[in-house]
Length: 157
Ligand SMILES: [Zn+2]
Image (cartoon, rainbow, N blue to C red; front, side):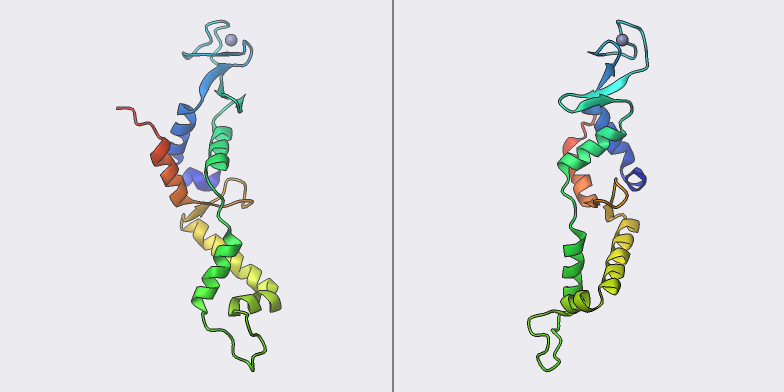
């Protein structure tokens, strides 16, 4: 969550609150105020109907992102980027006909290719172009996140 905390943390947290309700686990009821009217506790969970109930909103943020944003396919994007940067096909007596320089690098120096991919991911993450909520398992586009926020944040006037 480190990365998303930096970008739009407030907005996405607000959406998580708006899309969930305070819930008393002990009494199994949705609560409409700060205290449970039945047992008087203020130790309330958040409930998302049809999803679950848990303390805090981190899990709701994760759920919202997982279900509403499409992960970025960084491997494909990186390969396409290389092909844009090096559009000329190699011309070595036709030895690599049909392959781009990106394909050849991937085949012949996979370690270097992998390192370049990881660097690209790092750079984009640091620039705030993409972010991850599971330590790099999946990456999401910040633009998609902004769009999601615009569509879902109910502004209270
Ligand atoms: Zn209660």
